[in-house]
Amino acid sequence: MKLLFELDEEKRLFRKTVRDFSEQVIRPQVDHLWETGEFPYDIVRKMGELGIMGIPWPEEYGGAGGDYLAYAIAVEELARVDGSCAITVEAHISLGSSPFFYYGSEEQKQEWLVPLAQGKILGSFGLTEPEAGSDAQNTQTRAELKNGEWVINGTKCFITNPGTEMSGVVTITAVTGVRPSGKKEISNLYIPKGTPGYNISPKYKKMGWHASDTRELNFEDCRVPEGNLIGNRGDGFRQFLDCLDGGRIAIAALAVGTAQGAFEESVKYAKERVQFKRPIASFQAIQFKLADMATDIELARTLTYKAASMRDAKVPHTMEASMAKLFASEMCMRATTQAVQIFGGYGYMDEYAVSRYFRDAKILEIGEGTSEVQRMVIARELGLR
Image 1: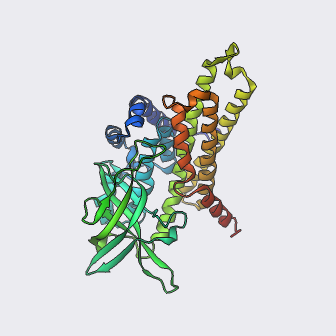
Image 2: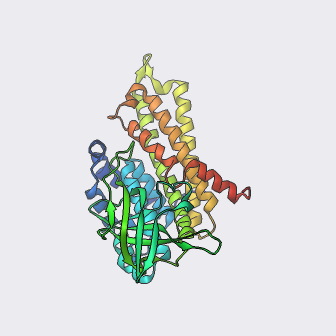
């Protein structure tokens, strides 16, 4: 008899495939990647060969023909071992590829989605700006249509995947006019790497995710053809809100995986660490920490899988995506904090994985909508705003 919430055999086998890859290919390189901050080119290329870089996209567009639940499982398993590899995949699929799949023309899909889904190039999405973080409608980047070309000027910050040797294209939000109501008309445009006027700054030095590529982008009279508009003019805000629903589910999965990795390290350490002549796992204070971590992780996983399944079923899921992202990210911060506490002084040392999990966790409460924004979204969906 199949249990409620039980994954089917196909999903279980898929999880094992990604877990085996994470253990055998990624884990041996994690220490080096963290210390050097080098981008994991060989790992990303191998993930492309396995189909991980295009899990939810149809085979006709170079994808693996999977679904969003499979994608969430993959991100979770990658994050269980290394957050940098997990966020590289998450940003590439949820943000870099989604606009082309959901809103791109057939020509745009063939030109860009196919190589993105195959993992031959990496995609990025430029939403955040110095003056437009949580207030995404305050976009300052502008695109003016002149003689059949969009002339783009502005700055994007905290953008993932734009500056690697594999990076191929970035999609950005830009103000393309003013609506009759006086509000900004926001549209999405894509800009291939190497376009004159598209300038990529050096990598940020970050608290966590050392091996992921995060940069500021500057556009100075950057010109792209009129046909580089994705979907309809003025639909950019609605488009990226839908993409963010999917992205929040994936961030929730990333949080679940990060917390799971920290939890497993903590259980192992608690059984090995001896104080007062017995393993610290025998002390109720440690047992309660681990019990709380296990419970929180399972709750977050269930919320995440529910939201992913709703997206696959094409039913409204904005509230569920925000709930999953909110609970999972805050749970991850709690779990990794307790992991460091269980390790004590050793948990503060970089050579222990829980130190990395802890530093990777904080950004999950910020990226793709802060915890405060998630609460605003949930309140709105409840009819309270």
